[in-house]
Length: 138
Length: 215
Image (cartoon, helix red, strand yellow):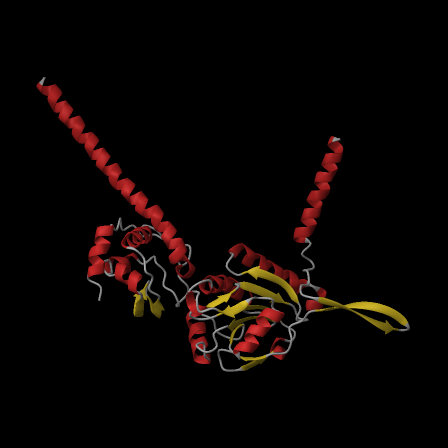
């Protein structure tokens, strides 16, 4: 009887862990696939289908170190634009990215897409995180 | 019956092959005017093809570039502006392989006309060229009077350009790469935003270079 109870609890625990994992997985997939659509319509013309950028005019999106270092300001850059000197993939850029009035969820989706494409593996960016970051824009 | 189908299939196949690889001669586009003249007492009709007329623009080095600068050259023309947020980055990303393929050929040029000459001054074009990694005299970025550029775009290269403050960037234009031969005739028009068509352009330039009257 006691053994049966332990096994039962154990099974419950296992299933709930698997369920949670797939919930996270699902969330990621939802963000990622919607993000690819946002990317296609809003980013791809300039940054390229493979995030390759264009020479020294438009930076590539494959610099994971840059993305990590600027994690909390990327949402602001997307919404309000970005100007001035940047070093990405060891190349210096001095152009301007136009602002685009994306919603918080669109920003979260497209950041999740970029964070996990073009060789980046940086996980999900949630709408809550984007909301927090946007409140602190300069 | 089966034989007939076979023969038809084979002849279609041959026809298709001929059409594809028979790129020995590229078509000539634009309006054509028949002219009748008398040669040695005989009346002959000749076809006059549309050609690119005289023009005068300035390139990214501040040098004056005219139709004469392109005498004896095969060239590709397009229309863009440096602050373009829509198709220009794609077009010039796709133009780079064309530049790389032919940059050492003194008889080949690329001319990109800015449709926003007010912003795209000579120094702005030079900076753009530097950032694009283009140097030398294979790829010229041309600036000139706005009316002249719009006119040559629409009437001669058959590419629509117009100002429209309602669109992102403020201009509407088509992303065509237009291939011009040494006789200044239009030999092809390719969607510069489509890499497959740009591959075709590179193949067609080679085909054109092999034509007897292009040597």
